[in-house]
Length: 269
Image (tube, rainbow, N blue to C red; front, side, top):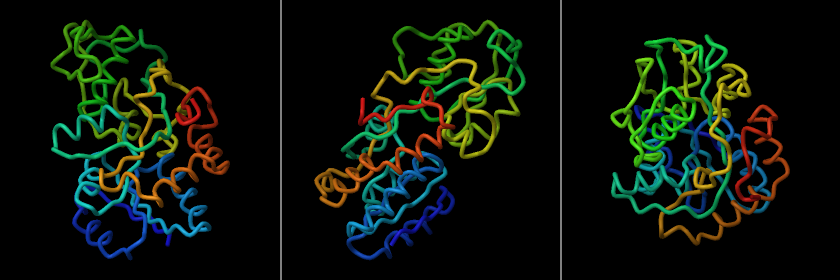
């Protein structure tokens, strides 16, 4: 059975009830919309031909997928990179583990009002992710652009409190990562994830004013599960199908606007 269920924090209880009713033997995979959900759905169709039943559960936030996985309502999720997972385990007391890699996405700073970083005005509004790791990653990109300076030791765990210099007195708007594409038109500058931009049909994902680059493999999305599920043969087979499927790779390319600069397939690096 291939079945996509959309869930938000507000409907988490309904999601858990739905997932709990799934027949034994079904592989339940939590994803977020866009490249991750679409490519997993394609792999699920191919897995069915090999006797693996898959339920794809779609979330619109970055919190519930780990809660659902930890509680047993999912078997695996596919939405987070290693630093995000490490932070979730430390903050929430989870013991979730990454078992393999997936897409490595570029991130960028986008503006629908200004043509360059230099054009960002004094007191301009900047939208940035509200979770600890992705906010820190966005702040590093803002520092790379020259708009701010951070404490030297913070790395990708930096927060707004770690800004030491903000010469343009930028005002920051914190938003759930998947929603950044939808509010870009309301601010002067926004952190952006190309696959979410494509999924939202918001604007050209290749129009970023600056990008992070796709060299750092720690930011590749991981297939994450519980320790007691890490050696599950159906999960291993599904990941093998995902990695080897030409249809999956083709759809990922489409999801990143057919632009090789915006992503990499981490398992091929």
